[in-house]
Amino acid sequence: MRSITGKENIEDSCANILTDESNLAGAWCDRAAWPETAEEAQAFIQNSAKDGISITVSGGLTGIAGGALPEGGAVVSTSCMKKMEYDDNELITAEAGVTIEELHRFISSTAGEFFYPPDPTEETASIGGTIATDASGADSFLYGSTREWIRKLELVLPSGKLLEIERDQYRFEGLTCRHPDIGTLILPELGRKQPGKNAAGYCMHPDMDLIDLFIGSESTLGLITRAWLKLAPVPSFLFDLAVFPEDFTSFWNLFENLLNAGNSLRIRAIEMMDDRCIDFIRSHPGDFPLPPENAHCALLLRAEACNDDQLDEALITMEDLLDKSNVSSETAWGGFEPSEQQRIRDFRHALPESVNHLISEARRECPSIHKLGSDGAVEPLKLREYYFRTRSILEEKNLPFVIFGHAGQGHIHANALPHNLEELALAEEAMLEIAAAAVEMGGTVSAEHGLGKLKINLLRIMYTDREIEAMESIRRTVDPECLFARSLKF
Image 1 (cartoon, rainbow, N blue to C red):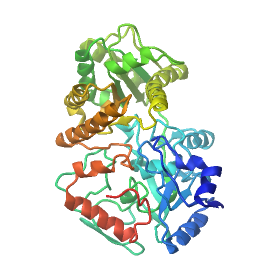
Image 2: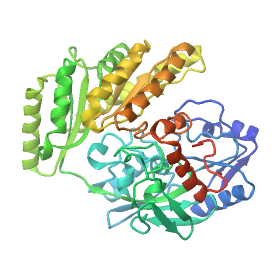
Image 3: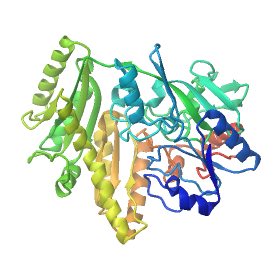
Image 4: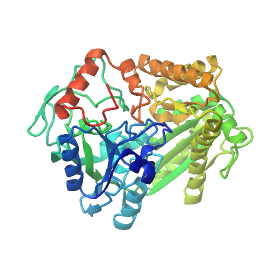
């Protein structure tokens, strides 16, 4: 196992573990280790715990909330834990450092008739990181988040205990679960049920499976070292479609008609880009396709079919919905060919890439500048109201912004693009107001990115003091000294 001690040594030889996609500055640590096995990770954690050293878990470093950035203590990186195995029961065993891209390649070569449905946008994200944040992506409209596809976890507790937790092995009885190696865990009685798509705080439902407490816990309860991942059969047909309504009325009519399409469409994803996104892409051209001339906004759809009859029905339904919603099919992109699907993916990914480039340019003039993005979600049928409330908050502060995201799940990202410190302060105010609006509408402050350092303060918008104290009690049961992710304070 490679390990380095000393703040200066780490900064000189492996400074990459002190940065992630959040672009937060100031991270540092005194120890760092890259275990290759669970046993090596266990030994490092045991030694750190014996010395009272706090531990930050590091994976693919693709997070945008700063959860993997240490404030002293030790870092344990899973990036060298790369083993994978496939068995005939439609399961893949993958160590925590395996990336989504590596997993996809392995499945293609060993189990080509199956695929792993969770679809985070960033393919260099690690399996451990996606489990720690219960990551999701566009296809979660049909397939759900990472949680739905985890059969078993191997993890190292903060005490150094190595154990496995299998789904259906331990469950809460009401609000209480007793585990021989963990202790007695008690969930709070929430004032309202957690939203279906939620990455804010611990998963807390009466009678839930114990494994779900660790999924989405942002490495505050231990280090995930290996996971048993369920696979799904590859459908016979998969098609992508990008349509470009010429006004918002047509867009929202089409969106709501799609939500009500029923079984005639097996929709994997419904994504949106608003008019500001379209303008932004046009004004920041790059090596990606540009939208049609009359496009006001964009709706991106992915659907699948299991047989010819289902495909015919889906295509007829889609054509009818476009006509009913007054959205032209003449300017649409789409098809079954990989090249056409790649065209739509390139278009979708062009926006966040261009936004990140703009922020990088702004940081050259003002190093404190960083992108601020909301991660809230509401019930899909409330998305129209939530979108316009979000837009109004940003417009009232006269901020540059774009809004896009997973419309099918009522989940949008409002990205404020500050150019100076005054706009940065206004953008921080706007993010708080947008989060509060989501909660007021029965939604969540974070649907897929987790809270990390940047958004931990949003926890108190969504939960009462009593509920947060109960989460802290759960954490103290598993980690009495609060050694793991100490900078993520509830």
